[in-house]
Length: 99
Image 1 (tube, rainbow, N blue to C red):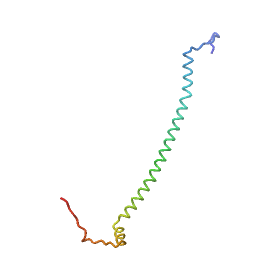
Image 2: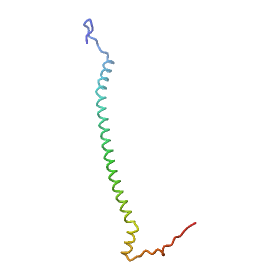
Image 3: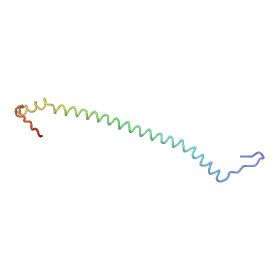
């Protein structure tokens, strides 16, 4: 750098240090921004995969719940009872009420 009368302006050690820090910050801030954006994107991808797994597991659970309801139906129980030689006699059922 030159002044009006042709002399060089010297930078002090502190000024050199501050300019160095400023240059480092100007380079580091955009890199940090890109890095955090990539981490956020990766986390969002993992969340979407987990949501997909949860949805598929919920479908499996619903299917199994329907199968349990079908197997526990009175008609199915009576059919299986008949296969094993058992019968459903309403007079044999006793209700015990507790007060």
